[in-house]
Length: 305
Ligand SMILES: [Zn+2]
Image (cartoon, rainbow, N blue to C red; front, side):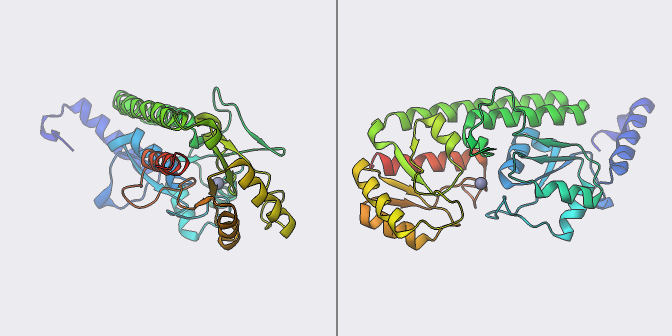
């Protein structure tokens, strides 16, 4: 409570109103930590980081899915009920990534506004995965910027007294993301096109691939969640060899043994350390740093540097 002794009566009233509003929002974070920052709950660590970057010191943020957790199939716990009830704003991706949140909100009777960053995103060109929109838009940094802009709009609306601060923080962050986007595009496009085909066992990469000039050869995975047959494996090995594919992106849901066997046979590299739905530990604990990491790894493997 900076400068309290100097406050006029009028400003003091405003201060009291802010405190009352915070209490009425049910922030319930204990008297010792009560403050007027917005408390935001996001479904994933990636979205939580976007909120943190845009909101700066005007927000506190929690992710429901823990770091490294599986966003698509997350099973909320009783403590998550409390989290959504106490939130001032709930941020999700939507498009099927985190639909479990809807039942959680209903069960909890949470009343905070909910924003689905990926849904109805202005200018988005959605990728259709067999009748379903692929939800992993943020892996194209242009869409990451659009997510951040949307978050800024929500925070400004909920905290109008600090709208100018939020706008300035968001603008500085957006400039960093724009530079990152250009940097990833420049570095990947410097790799000869013939070397830019990858095989992905993960459905996370269509937006990244389209934005940064990779071709995803996904013919191997006809039935998601099911390992390919022996004949399909043979066909895949032949294809990886014929096309000179250098990288196979692995995913936990498929047997790592199978992926490694295919890669060994065909002379490709298995890449199993890319970040998609979650941030990692420092120094790859932000959206910006996971995008940079993924680009570095792909350039290293595809360009053979
Ligand atoms: Zn995913």
